[in-house]
Length: 300
Image (cartoon, rainbow, N blue to C red):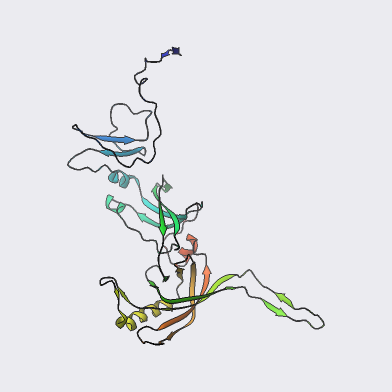
């Protein structure tokens, strides 16, 4: 059979398997031989018998077996990438928010660990994206899913975080200022509402006790000095993130005074405070303006 000058078995690769797109390859095994190079690429159209001398953006891995099994492209990436941008979104949604940006000047800058303190609890599943920045343009992203869970409540700034699982109670309310007027000669009152204010507010009570991560135990005897640190943070006037184990996440300020009830034991007092919502806790621009993150990049 011929078609446009080609016969069924005349081509060099005509008898080979039909190319297929295989996703999620997690391991590769080679054995029973001496190998000088292992090269994987997503680009199969122009690849001949010679391996390209340099990495490109279709290269998946290349192992040269020069006294190491390393097959990564850290050196190549470091020479091409000016920064790595870290984004987050709730899985199943579309809008990303940018939380971090790591400047890259050498290969060592690509080895970093980032902790996202501002994630919801209650098993919320997030997607995090690592985005290379090349000449101020975002490159191909790498996405991983993470489930966020924790116990208790947390009140956090960029540099300080305090949490507790002990005796916490939250009395929430929604603030919607309005006024009622009863005009003369009219049976019913008139209610006026000015503006669009509609925000979260809560009275929070809990017990702060120092937890020693080395001994993995609470230290009530260290309570006074520890609570002084907590109270100084709560009353410094800076915006904070307030979150609870059941998924509540708010950008807040502490208003008014803190009070302490020593109750049955002076080493385990109950601390009470009032918080007011002051902005969108899931807007990177708002987080930046309130000095909770260092980057101000909005968009999908």
